[in-house]
Length: 363
Image 1 (cartoon, one colour):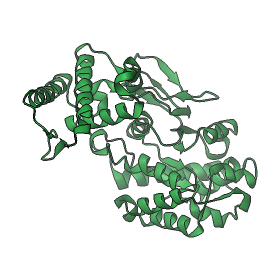
Image 2 (cartoon, rainbow, N blue to C red):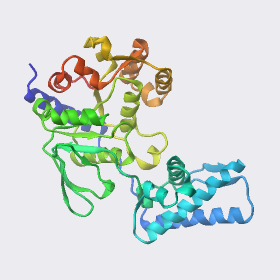
Image 3 (spheres, rainbow, N blue to C red):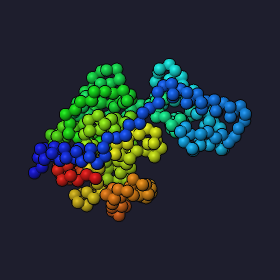
Image 4 (spheres, one colour):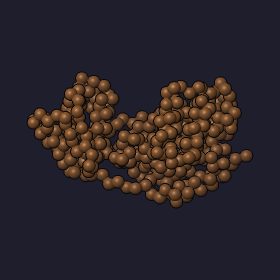
């Protein structure tokens, strides 16, 4: 019989091992407002000069790098104009000490952007070109992630935020401005889906695995959720455990939290390498004898994602994760976390998670 005390002792051991193995996360100083404004002005001048002289293809140096960003096709001229517009928008926000979200900018001129993904890709392009995190450009994203459990902190206005609520609270947009984190938790549980997040709250998961902080990005996590998780480790050094579906997308979501996004990690530094994979692991499908009605066949898209992930350096370098991924391919099926209810409605809270932590079955 697993006891709370055994679980807590194991989590304390994990915390010390993570601190010893990883050390503190590196700190990347952000440029100040004046430096950011000067960098934006530099690129505005370059684009205006290129347009005035009729230069095409347009080639711009990526700040602080030997690489360049090139626009070759005639169809890309509009993308250059959108980039110029966004540079000017960010410059205005910085000059007036105001902030905006991508969603707000999109709805200010829907006809200009056409659709939200066009704006998203332009923000990413601008971030790469300037080599500056988007939080320094006063352009943020609207949070979608939730947090609940034993945690309180001060928001950017100095207001006390208590996360011990029956439905969780929305992770604030201004994660960088949060302060005075306080918690009695022994660990953080990062949950893939909102439905599982809510079920764990309803099941009072803390009765079975000790006081904890629950986080969900509601699928693939947004920037604010990832930054929030990293801040929790930096501020509290609580071990974080990922609970995702036993499918390629679950492993991909784990990888985004732990290793970062291919597009932005070198600039945004959002990864939490201390995160460990607790479940649902593909090896559990056989070990738990999960009923057939809980299993779903892998689609061709799933198989393609398995093959893509298997070629990523972070998977190649982590044999345990690679083995789980290849096991998924061999089984040719997947199981969602909700599939554990086929064993018992509260199997996840009362049995699965306590046993996994007690046996230190993370990777």
